[in-house]
Length: 456
Image (tube, rainbow, N blue to C red; front, side):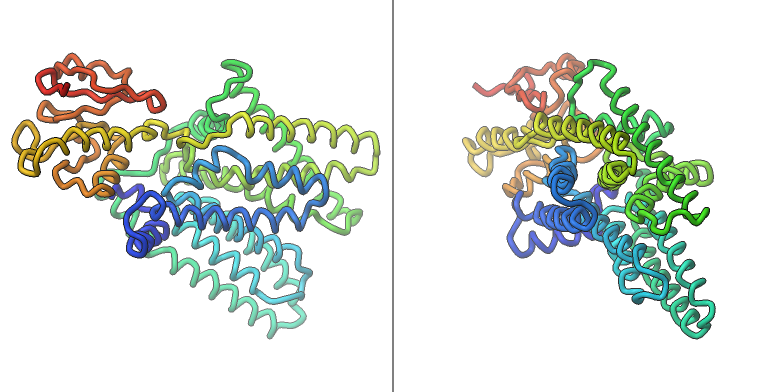
């Protein structure tokens, strides 16, 4: 397995599902289904806690109908489980944040920590937001401990329990993650990333969320990022206004949900920058920053509720209308992007199964002793890196012993029997003197054979 795809907890569950139900598309996707159930349930309980009536209905649509997230919940990767655990971790974090000093124990803190650890074990890329989550928990616990300073025994007891919880969470996560990092370094592999926070992280993530739609032509991405920046700026102003009123003694109750989601959304950006400056870690790109999506969407929904509670009725009505328009447009975008056929970002894999079945059909016409490649060995399918995981999966799925395993970065070779490449990549056609066998529309891939090997 490619080390970067070894999402530890997810991989373990996939192996368990295959052991129980056999190797199939359904079995390897069962852990992702579990992640989706966790995400849906956590989103429901979070939204129910903060929103009501119309806000709740729209909020559910905004959180659960995102086509990019739905793609992740349909793929056998660790993102689905990690998102599910993250949302439940956020739920318990907010429960703890809303407890009054001296009220309740550390059960919510423990649940938030260990669900956060589970998210990291399901996908190591979630470590960044987990660090911010731990920092928020530390601030909350320090606040509670200061309240207990007149009760030193209780304060020391709670401090010890909290330190033990954090230490246990760190130890549970540290060894598996260190092992994975060592494997990645040993194979010169790494999680995808880039050098620019704007171009690789923000633009990449926004582009994925647009799902290939260009409503305003080339300016669609710029407009989308501009709206996101305005919303973040608005939340920032509201949060600072709340803090000012609290410090001035004019505000009794803080909006914990809005404050915590804002800290998570901005704090993780600070972590990205620090990791890049101190350790030269690349900025996350595309799906490796996907944890920001549900947190940001929840923050925007809580902002909507907050703006609608303005004492000035005209301002409240204006804010309500603007946010309503934005969320309706977002839901319309979701509907326009409904996709039940393939994973949009990895559409090059949409036809791999059909290609393998075609190769099977061609070789099933021969006897077992005749199923050999042009060099007398296994039938070899020449593919480039993106196609490798799916080709190997279907090779194992259909028990094709006579088809050779494919490897990343091996490239194409003259001894390959079939060539499954992007139709726009015409260089190998002339280099190896290939003839087209089949063209696949969705993935944009083409299957070629050598001119002398073309089957009738």
